Image (tube, rainbow, N blue to C red; front, side, top):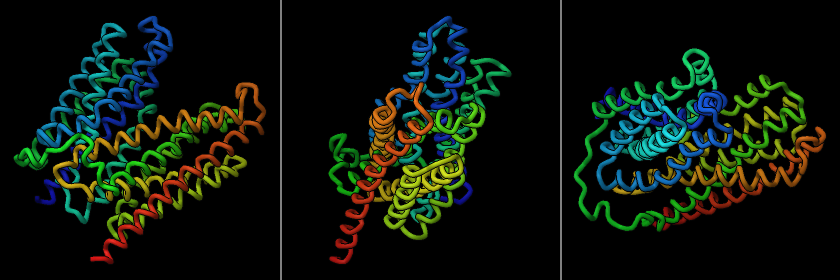
Length: 405
């Protein structure tokens, strides 16, 4: 594949990942306007956000499997067109029920886009550049999530809530045009190529290890979004605008470190850099378990997030390189599912640790909230240690197998 075509094809995968991530965060800023526009309660309009996430979680593995059976390029195009159509349907929604239904459709399209974006990296770039491509996709995912509230705020103030959804339509069409023009054509599949049960790739120990580690570290990162706002506002007393800036540090670090993390993975190897990323996360979580003050908190958050970027680039590369080409879509779906389940686990379990340590957060003292932060990231340390033990065990097993050859 020519370099220019490879770059244009990678641009379509990157735009697909960016749009799927943007769809997760851009709607949040419009919830008050939706509640007012449809004369609905907060709990009712909250489903505009929840149904998108639930649709992605429910469909993403099946989307990956369909890509393996029917063709990954074909399914990416279908996902982009469904996403684009759903953006238009959201933008013209006459009722809240219509909007929620269109968001489900948008989530289905996004699931195909996310699974195929990861699944097609091996078809689009050379093996030597896989880590950089994975780092780029991780960067675009972080950028999409981070820019959602700010871009959404601008669109909302200029054109109202409908613009939050309509903005995705032309971008989705652009990604579809790039994919149709520059991504490699699907190869004919035989029954044996796409055979086996949905979960047959899980027979590989390396895949099970990668998925488990992905879920564990995602849970830790979710704790920064669940617990961080309480610490910044209740313990440090930051005003909402300053709290928002502090919360943006993590996504900004992820955006700037994703591509360098991918380059390091290509240069030094995925197994070594997985351990390096987890080691940085251990340092960051330990510092958060001891943090006192804004500078200490932000410094620890930078280290934790940079470590997560390195882990994600290396682990995604290792997982996708170890699987056969016929199952890349399925495994990409499983990788995204493991991350989503980890986010849910982190919000519920580590959130419960914070609630246990700080029972009455509304009236709690600054020291009590700080103690809740410390207890939460002490528990998070245990999750990272477990992920590190899994990575170390897998790395040793790979070394033994290589020496045996």
